[in-house]
Image: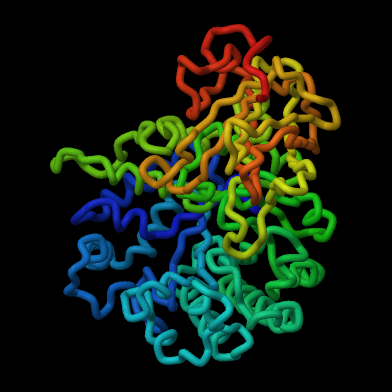
Length: 546
């Protein structure tokens, strides 16, 4: 069994159950068989989530759907029905998954979501287990908003309940590679402001889980069970949330961590993790989408992975990658057609073309395979407050217009690239507002800039994230881009005199084309500058910045 997998794939277990009506064991084999021949070195398969309901047949918690045989929700009925069909046919859904992966030679981690707020929107529904429902006094509460329903790990009974589930899974499925504690799906564990203070409690809990796993391994005469933990994006933020990962590393408690945030972060501080940890593997946590439910393209997966490897990551951890199947399930298909493989999802609404996205599983486990392949990097894509961390923001105050500074990373060698293009949006502007750009301290000539304007902004008729009227700037950056850290400066040089407020700089996208010119989905063929048109020479002239 590989002890240092380069590419780990998380599967939340519901993707399969939701895919089609009346699924069976053969369907599950076909679903998993798509991993054969890929670079996936380990699968983390979710076994428990929500208010601690399980996908396996548990004696500690309730299997998902227990007590909900009649429902008015079609998808939930499918979810429960398929799990029950598998129980009757193969004995246990999760057990069959682990057995099938073992036959394929792919090690598996049993993944537990340490806190999961899905029951926030349905507190009496099927993901709200009795343990959670019976103890409202153990919840985090306000000011955690959506996460208020999460459980407080300062309560001994909360920690002990998860420990019992972990021990049950190891006893039921002793051939798994190990356990994953997913601390990112809902990354809060203690009352507001109490995370750092209670970090020793969490460390003691991790120590107990490690001891239980070691005892189980000795009893079975087998190698050490792996213990993997998904953690907030930086060592400092993890500690604020109650996770002293450096202490875990010092004591040899965990084998690997995957730092990240719920949206894909192309600038994870992996180098800080490598400096803080000695023996623990660090895999970059890469989600399936940025904010607004826009799923990543193959080029964007490549960009996220390439930046992570260049910063020192030992590997890549993919979260929600199987959600590609959920998009495919939105497409009508013949009833007689089996669900797997699902139909390809071509570009629709605000989504990119995802036809080739599954190729990521054949590339992301090998940094060398990513060299000189087309990539796209996304920066400044999140709203001002998102999940558990304040993402990077850039703006210009109209009445005190200090230039906006946008810092971003790219480790590509662009000397031989056919294209290096930066796209960004200036939001809340009119055509009377004018701007000057500088890259790494050097002014960008107007001949290298194209400006388009969206007078109606953007709303949910075409995209999941609303924007006020904005201008789209496209910049040829081949000559000014550095390998590593870069800084783009945006200065307001003339403003609409009748407007107050703030101009936001949003959704910066860096496209590096080694093989082809990467299509800009925001620009029509008629409007495209020469550097954006296929089989055309690079941009040498164009519209000015104003």
